[in-house]
Amino acid sequence: MTFDRHLVLDQLGGWRGMVDASLPTIAFIVANGIGGLTVGIWAAVVAAVLVFLLRLVRKESIQQAISGLFAVAVAVVIAARTGEARDFFVLGIVRNAAIGVVLLGSLLVRWPLVGVVAEFLAPSHLGAMSGHRLPSLRNRLRAQPAEASTGAEAGAEREPDAPAEQHWRDDPRVLRAYGWLTVLWGGVFLLRAVVQWVLYLRDSVGLLGTSSLVLGLPLTAVELVVTLWVVSRLHRHRAEEPAADEPGAEERPAA
Image (cartoon, rainbow, N blue to C red; front, side, top):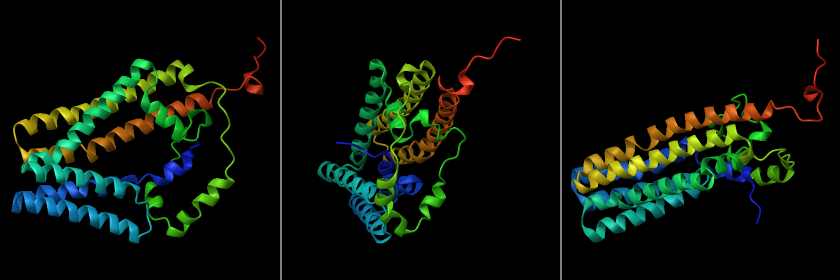
């Protein structure tokens, strides 16, 4: 089975997807504080369904909306069965801990997962991000639905990416940078899990909700900015290396 990285990029929800994913949690926190667990559960479910329907009406990608519905459904079932509002956050705590462990574990085998994902979505040897020329998320969000319908046709016409002369794992600088980025992402996931676990043990539902939001979208935004900056430098580093058969690679005669 082959994977089209352009298709994966088209399926990412961008900032709107991240905000949509936060809405059910916000609804649960507010409603639970006002009317109790039952009201909070129904508010989270309604918010998740509305997000799904809104994206469906707008003919946007519903992949994240479906994932959000599933996550909310599991969280709601756990909280409803135990009768404790804090259990709404159990799935998130376990998920953050698991992702953090997997990310940091990938360093042990010298396959930093941030590098694996980054090289799949935007291979550094192509140098596409070397000048920070990233597609505007705002423009992507404003794109007409008709453009999405022609995405498959456009993908079929794309030429395959040129193969790399050197694998990214064989470049010490690239491997080291992806390693530190993996530490960053893995550490943040574990930080979320630890902070929320402490608050879970204290049964601080309000702080659990607040921490999930504060350590969610804002912190992820900072991570993305740092990651894009580092990746752009890696693209510049690899793109500026002249090939052996190019004129720039020839040794200049001594003066």
